[in-house]
Image 1 (cartoon, chains in turn orange, purple):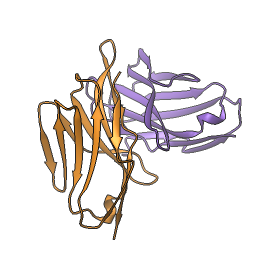
Image 2 (image 1 turned 180 degrees about the vertical axis):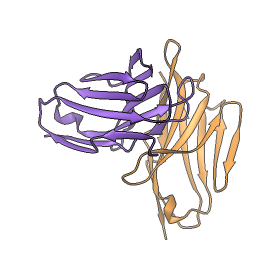
Image 3 (image 1 turned 120 degrees about the horizontal axis):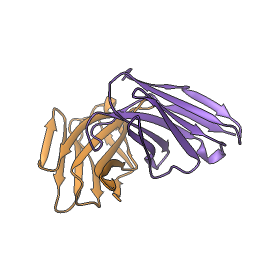
Length: 115
Length: 113
């Protein structure tokens, strides 16, 4: 099955700096890579996603890049703000059993943006 | 996202008790999931259901069972709770084949003493 590794587990940056979180996956058939943000005490919510036919996607201050050859993808947050502080999860949609697919999540990155 | 709700939000129980966690959704999605979240371990899939007649085990189904009562309802049961089932449990739904974007409920914090 799919295995997703996420690094770093914690990341502390100064307000205004950039933050980068990286994930690797094992299943070359995986074709959908979402990122979720979970604020303290809240539910995970999708912030951006990318499909395997695209190398990069941007949405205002966040961007995701995908390298299918190397089987890794990254989340980039520019001009970080205190409200970006949260746990971020990457995920990869890969084959689970038979024709069933599921999302496998990374273990999460706790991002702290210091004012 | 108020479209996915979970009850109860918090529960403290004792070892050996049977516990049911409930999930309801008004999004009209066929696919529903149960995850548990533990610090440092991310979100792990317990069970999932692609329609009312379809139930599948996830990666950590031992000690859990589920019931899909209707398209909108998916319940998770712990037949005999044990302390290492203490965790935050999330229900989620998705609308695309093969698990697209997941829409999570608010979570249930379960403590087993």
